[in-house]
Length: 62
Image (tube, rainbow, N blue to C red; front, top):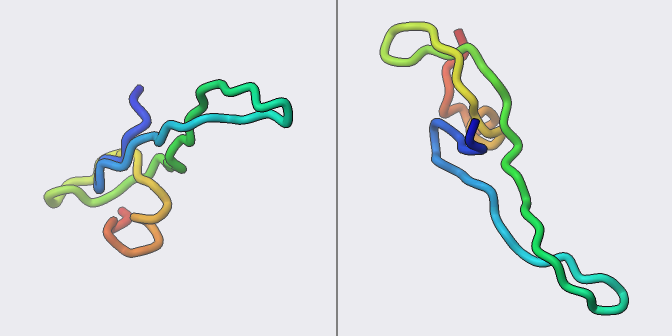
């Protein structure tokens, strides 16, 4: 299952982790997703939504 918010489309961000010895390796920052029962076009559906969409009120919980 993809790490994507179904409301805003937010995806993981990529970057580097750098040690004290300056060894560089790739890492990713995942989205903080929560499974929610929400109203989608008049019906109740389970969707995965990021917490910023939940806090801002973009999702109507069922």
